Image 1 (cartoon, rainbow, N blue to C red):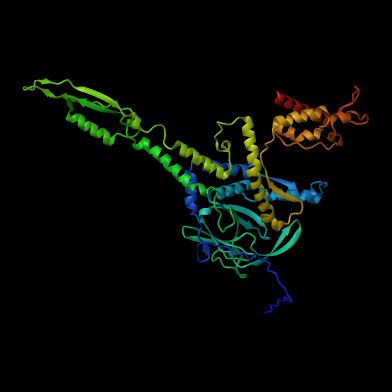
Image 2 (cartoon, rainbow, N blue to C red):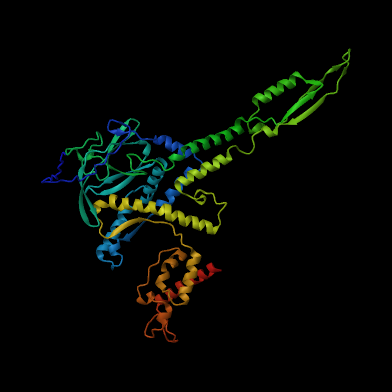
Length: 499
């Protein structure tokens, strides 16, 4: 019997790759540049011709970035008293976002990028750095003029996360913008190497005025190019468009022959035959829809002398049943619209169709869509904003988030606050945010510690100054009076809401 021996051989030095070794299919390419799977110009035209896609894209644009930005302290600083360093960083970040673009609000830059991303699958933002090498300005770029290169060789980059420094090896792409034969190269955001915007080549000796700017690429998917989420519905979109054109052509080229003229014992005159031919060949369009057709008929001769003619019988037979009705393919168009909306996971109320909604179903539709669609999208973009775009600033205390709508049920909130107030569970500071919404302005919490206690508890403290003492000689501080007035307004508003 043959014996088989096995042994384990260990290397004296083991090294691990610091970059991803997965194989990536870059698709069709011409040289270093990759051909997009779908022509961006065609995608833009298709999205414009759709009857529902522009509304879906506009709903994403408005509900993801249209409410603007907000600032908040990071989790480690939420329960800590505000320090001068925290306040200074807050003010500095607020000013940075305010001047990130001088032609429009920074939120509009992101909103336009979201629109481009939903229309073509790709949104490109040009990032311009200042003299210190920090991101200082952002501009939108049209996706139909951008081409993406293959991934290059890995390079070492330094990144900051939560105040900690990390070193990683990362691969980057290059971007080429070509308009009317003019070419400009860009590098991916975060690429530490110098690159020429004229040639697209890397090098240390490139003059500062020739250094390429960077592109922050927002895309749907993980390929070199993104794909629009509605691409699987493109056959329905094309069919729906043709159905609309067919219905439109009916008004321009449709024939208006509502009846047939049957003549017995007679014949049409030459003038009538010519008139019928002209009617059949040239009568079209809405301007000819209700014109009269007059026919002249001659009776057939009867007898030898031809002095007597037969009685002519004319019958008008309706042919209205062969004409086009209201509109063709209405069911097909309705199904196509619903399929396109399902690609965006949007209910009808977000695209301007609210016939089958009441207040309860509309509020529930907004709540589910906000929870399942818009809020996750905001969080993904906020991660890119904080951990990619603003990463070079190494922010210690402040982070940026995308604002969203207030979808809370005002009636339920009013009822709960009324109950809590009756049992003494609501303090003046608890309702300051609601006061601001009712008054239409931002209101701050009262600094008096007494404003953090419910009225019923505070009334039991004889030594306190809040609420107003019951004695006639007690003088009410102006701040206490304003608290009570605001609280009265809130409670009256809640009472009106319950009624």
